[in-house]
Image 1 (cartoon, rainbow, N blue to C red):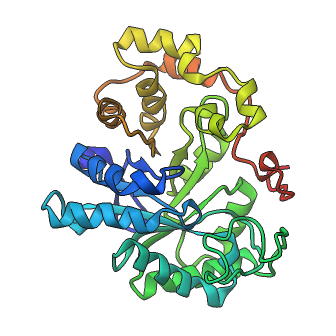
Image 2 (tube, one colour):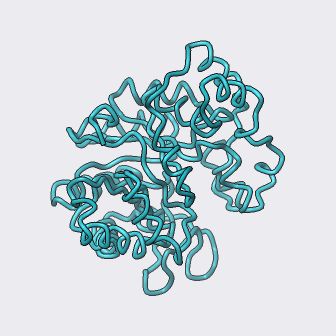
Length: 321
């Protein structure tokens, strides 16, 4: 991927601005999807413990490397620390387990998935553990964000991760983290689409030299299959009149417009698809520009509508109230 298609992180490393998201990629297709995405030109893969498919992701990567499609050094592999492993002594062991699942020696980026500490669940009991403990209850843990972050910093010092970052943080938590972080977060990953612009948070993070990555760039699309009422009640962004009008004027798809709306503002994106044509289209979102007026039009769709909230899954962790 050309250098123009990367973001320079504050850790000194280059991160592709377009990657492949691995959330909800099924175990039976995951290895092939990763392999085919590498073949299509993707170099960043955004995974997580909680996705439950890291072994298969690693199989796809290993096959691509073995077949000479790519070198490990050319890939940017991302994973995330789950809530149940926030206790300082648990951070390194679980990171090492995830690396073993991927069959790699280091993560390019390792992210704190949520600013939530939950009671530890041993991987031998249930893995990934989800939001509940061994008794099926949502039980808060005792680790502070500072304790967890300090343990993540040691991962960098030991060479297990090149960069560390955060996800699903609001501005006040980020401000607090920056007070004590010896290694600043390289990235902030957030839900970011025209229904949830969060422009103030994006500008604050970027102003602090923290790269922003958007997930769920197509808004409710990702959440319909989860039978989420909030998603069913929201008109599809891919069919929104404003998005369709802009797409037609540029001879692009609505998906490409939504992704370009982010990347043009230096926000990285991690869409996924198992369709060969859409794989290529999602990667091809840097060769055209929206006008300032068009970006403003897309901003105008904002409803402050968040889908990826624990409360929407029936989990009583009100992190966004």
